[in-house]
Length: 109
Image (cartoon, rainbow, N blue to C red; front, side, top):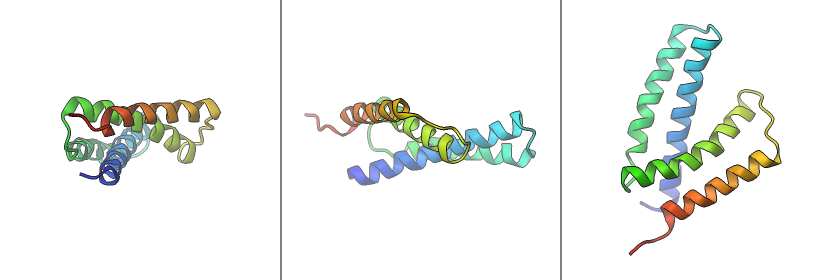
């Protein structure tokens, strides 16, 4: 799998997990309709399927996904939930993405 395809899978997995969790949050914490909670649960299940599309082993995939999750969570909170990240949030997300890129994308023997 190319690096671009792999990044797309990480991004799609992140949207499924964060979107699913957000819908469940809305249902449980903000008294939104049950169908949002059910849809969120389905998205969370889809997240597990999407993440399994990566070719590497579980440990490396999930470790790398953690960095993508950090960055995507900040972006989601900023664009969807009104959170205002500061420069340190962005710096932290960039550092996390650099770290997980080393873990996942550096060729090994």
